[in-house]
Length: 389
Image (cartoon, rainbow, N blue to C red; front, side, top):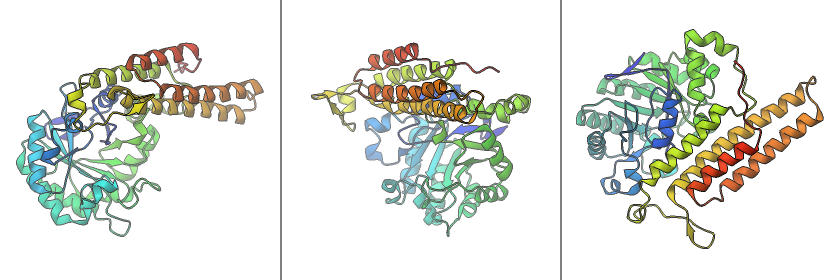
């Protein structure tokens, strides 16, 4: 079991914080699918931005499962300490410090992964944040600033000495952003250098891959980011593969499913309803006008926040359906025993149907229309099929 302060995690796979993605509805869905811990999208440490609608949406939420984790980002040690206290007062049970974001708008302010250029500043930030709160403080970072300056081990040792209680390391430098393949040797070095839990992050997209990374790095767990977009059940897949009692079952069923299952369809619909319910609480003119500019579509008809957020997540689910249909087409093409022309036509038609549905969904302007569209889409197509055990 992985322990972070007083909190014992019930698995080895956790959700990475992702700006604009890991909102409360998505965290709730991932937790239900087996994520052992979920972290809210990063929140700025700037006091003058704390009351904006975007910041208010990123506060700890009582609906989140424990431990409730909030990630903060910034460059000023005193501001970061104040921000940490603010979030703990609002309900956060763990404070995570962002030192992994490679975004230009973050790094140009020497925040996120840019901090790895300044170990002395990192030390000051970590110390002031740890001293300011009575909850566990964790750190997410990269291997270094660039390939020639991998200082993750140095910072990891320093962080542990200061009192950081767990680390997450993305297997790329800041200069790599999300390009190329993640490397895990540096993560293994970090694990060997400290005595606190370390989560390996980067390019982990299956249970088998998670096991390989854990074997290579000896990390306590894995952190899943982009692979969970449109596929929150990846946590259930990883848990099944890593669980000793289920390993035999998992290894006998590791092929990618050819169809969207009924359970996955139901999860998509539930996720959409959660988005509508959550953002519906904030759909007031006073709340939104502070920082969120509503889009104007079709002769100045405003699109509400729930609809806009839904489009992003539902399109990721559609992309996952396309991937499944493409896998089936590839299987039929290569398997001469079943590769009939009618099968290939059906596969191509499924892909076309999904792509058209995605475009149609993105034109919808009302939340209730989105839900009705998806229900009708699944009732009129034959894209869901339960996989036999």
